[in-house]
Structure formats: structure tokens, C-alpha cells
Image (cartoon, rainbow, N blue to C red):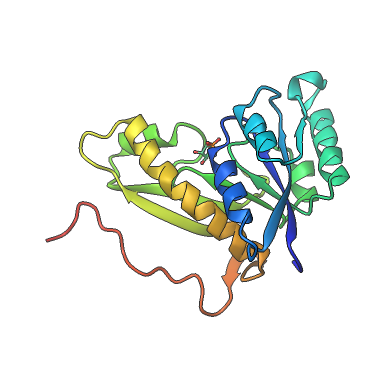
Length: 219
Ligand code: GRF
């Protein structure tokens, strides 16, 4: 991408990841600008937050369309009207059809609250607790037609602590989501991370983690 990439953010709910992206994009050297926040739920609290931040918003209510295809055509038209070049899903709770995913192939990121490929789908924190993993986290990935299965851009891990429940674990992961998503979008928007043959390749000097998270801490 050249210049500041024109980003559309898709939400369905509270939009805390959207807020972290809006805040990051306020930096003059951030390689992307958010030109639209759209939601399939007109009452999504995140839409009001986006409007309050001075951003353009669109509600494309899925219930107002006879089927998924009609909803997606309306959504696609709204995105194009606003000149969106790249899509970021941030708590967008509609499954997208292959038609829509192909239309935005290589130009659509999602954040998923687990260390993929573990715990696809919903209730990821409950899944992690049930599995007894000691490390959990979040993943930013390109969107492909198969749910939660696209090429991975970035991941952040957190410990699962004794006594954790879904609320405490999801809160710990969410803190990392808010750091990871703006950073991953910047990598992609600047061209320092790019898709090549179904994998994400990094420019030299980026993409190296600076340490290991080990849980429980080792002596
Ligand atoms: C986040 O946990 C995200 O990983 C998942 O949905 C949640 C959205 O939260 N896809 P928010 O609307 O960004 O606060």
C-alpha cells in the first residue's frame, strides 16, 4: 500500500479494539487512516463512540436484508462509497460468505481472542479454561473463507492464572488485543508484513519477539 491506507473498521458491539485503532491512527506517522466505521447493528455502542471521535459511520442492519448475500452487497457498497481500501474486523459478529471474502482477499484483517489455531469460534476463554492451557492470548490474521483460519500476522500471549474465570482471562487478553491490533495493522499497511503464497512474510528487522512468556514462571 502507498500513502496512508484508507481503513474501514467493521464492528458489532462495544468497539474497544476499534478505539485502540482510532487512537493509534491519530499519530501523524501511522501508516493508515480510518475513513469509516460500519456496523451490522445500528445500536452497537461502538458506532456512537466512533461518531463521537468524529469518524464517518454507517449502520448496515443485517436484519433489514432478506439474506446474507443482500446484506453483504449493501455493506460492500457502503465501503466502496467511502473509498475504503482495507478492512479491519473488530468484534464483527457476522460470518462472511466466500463472495465477500474473495472481494476483499488480502485486504481484510481480523482479531481473534485465542492463540490460533487453538480455540476457533466463540467462547474462546471458556475453551482455554476447559483445556487447561497455561498460556492463552490473541491473534491478528488475514481473513479467508474458513472461519478463524487465515494467515497469521501477529500474536500475543498471556498466562492463565490459578483462579481465573472467563472474565479475568478475557480482560487480560483484551489488554494485549489493544496493543497488538494497531501494531499488526501498521505492519501490514506499511508493507512491512505482506501476504506471499498464503503466508505472512516480514521485512527485515521486524517480526522478532524480544522475549518468551513462560507460565507459570520458571525458577
Ligand atoms: C474481542 O475480544 C475480539 O478479539 C473479538 O471480539 C471482541 C470484540 O471486542 N473478535 P471489542 O468490541 O473490540 O471491545
